Image 1 (tube, rainbow over the protein chains, first blue to last red):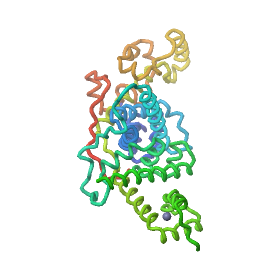
Image 2 (image 1 turned 60 degrees about the vertical axis):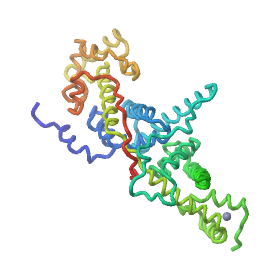
Image 3 (image 1 turned 90 degrees about the vertical axis):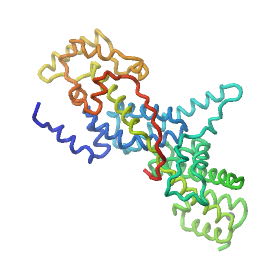
Image 4 (image 1 turned 180 degrees about the horizontal axis):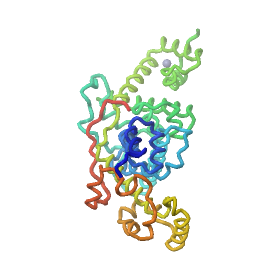
Length: 204
Length: 182
Ligand SMILES: [Zn+2]
């Protein structure tokens, strides 16, 4: 086949297409369109998952599972929510059930065990970028650790809002709670962090 | 305006910090809090700390995932797509539609449901998808566009040609926290 098909021409336009249009193209089996969705989201979803779960192996597994679910359920996507909210909801549900599973495991374990709350996230080079003002500010590592220690309902909204910059409405869609609840959880999460980091400051 | 000061009221003010910073409080409440902040250095300091905290969290930014991670996701999706394409839910060639439909019925009766819902684990453990593809009964069906072997984008052709169907678990090193917000 040497003649350019309508599909070939569409491929050229793919990068300019919206997420929703790419998803609908992938419904026709267009894997290149789906690849673009992977490219657009894998980074930030990974960031969300690893910050939520604190463990890169699980974050990788769940990242893959998220996209596989999106592929399987792509015909079910309704334009009620944005694609972004939809994929985060899928990832969030996976992360929450993984978290619950782990909690059960922790309760079942007998005797001293590795305290996962204390487990450090694998951030390279302490993650301090040159443009971040360190003086008079909380060290990145300490902040990351305290975010990890937040109860999951607060951690989730702090990550989505303060680290990933989502709107309250998007977060409400992802976490499946009212916007008011998102706001109060966010405030509570921030206050807890302030308190913890304040103590940390005093002790250094 | 009478400025209220008590530890309970300070707590109440703290509960409203985020809303205050968002400027989403009713005007009267906002004024009351502003007046309180003028009189209460503790609350003012706490509010300033919250602003710093928000900036610091913002500064954490995204965690840059290794590109290999995206590749392994794409490969996994291709394996799934291939498996689904091999399953007997394919579109028949139009002019053979009726014959194909009949064949689908026969096939469904004879082999039961396809491997579409096989779990990832089963797949990773080595599925029998290639045997299904080579079954002559499938030849009269057209794979959905882009899923057929010829149409699979070249990015992964080499891997596929090398028969690499292993579960890809390259270590995805996080190469640096970027001070970039997504
Ligand atoms: Zn006060």
